[in-house]
Structures are given as structure tokens and as C-alpha cells.
Length: 105
Image (cartoon, rainbow, N blue to C red; front, side):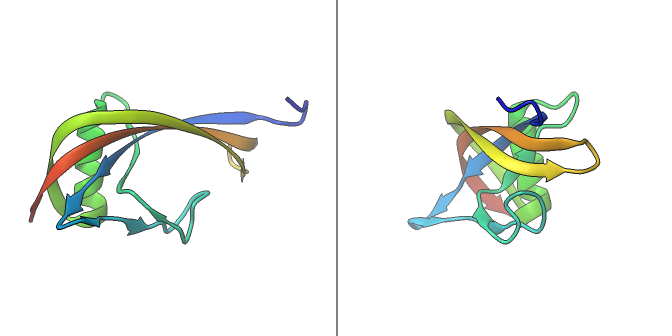
């Protein structure tokens, strides 16, 4: 690790929603993945379970109520990304994935 590196750890929960062999994705509007396609999901807020975070994020990002089927795994990524307001140079992004069923609003 370089002395000038200051890491931020980000915990996110994401859902994998398939419908007729199509994967639901969103286009990121901010953050280190801006402009890229990603699974709906995101930051786990204080006093929120992982599954509650996935359900909330799906409503916020896609307008869809979901039912969690099961946890399918965890991945982590090391990403160079400067967060000026936190003085960080890099992010350790920990992503937890769930498969789910959707019920459109």
C-alpha cells in the first residue's frame, strides 16, 4: 500500500432480477461507476438489513417491489476513486448479491 492511499470501505447489497431471460440493470448517475450499467442496489444504511437495503433500492431505482429468494454470493473490488469530501484515494467495494422475484408497482 502506498503511503498516500487512503481507503474507503463501501458495503452494498444488490439484486439479480431475471424476467424471460432478461436481466434488469440500471444506468448509474453518479459515483465511481457513473454512466455504466449495474444491478439495482447500493449502500446498506444504518439500522438496515442487507435484504431490506435490496428491497428499498429496487423501489427507489426501478419502481419495483421484490421478494428475496436467496443469497448468491459476495464479491469485492478495489477501485481507484477520489472522494474529495472524505479525502480518500481508493474504494474497497464489498458487494453482496441476491436472486429475487419481482412484482411491478
